[in-house]
Image (cartoon, rainbow, N blue to C red; front, side):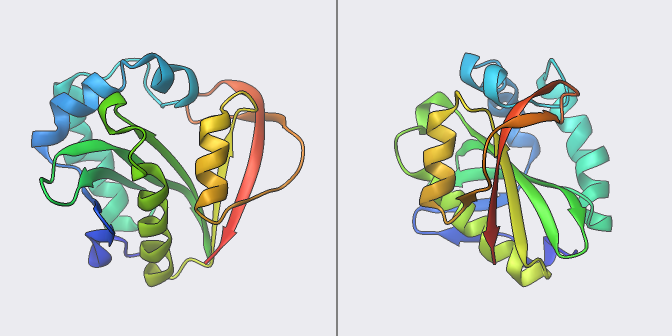
Length: 177
């Protein structure tokens, strides 16, 4: 999948773009937010600006180059300020899983829904036909975001392994592109 060729992607006042060194401080700070820690299931337990910059040059650059990972920034379209992260991962054939989180300052502005619409366009342009997402039954806000951006629930929660490696009950959602 060539996601990079279709970046940045936009929906209204939201831009989805490559992560930049200038995002490293805000990204690291955002991962310390209690809601992100509880529901984000991020692969690392700790992010520092240095680690984020290393990932931008390493695993993120490699994933974009070979089409196996798209770890992207959610930004305010007018100011280009970092507002959160959206990631396409577990990419197989014509489908990928999407995960997202917002900084506390960006919440309540519709950025999550708009970023998922932008990512749906990006995925379709890159050749995907289905986006998948998972969230915990307790994360009602994430469920609302997924449903508002065209995802439908696929039934009851069941134990699944997260990107952090934890096995927890998760609800599955899908969105055809």
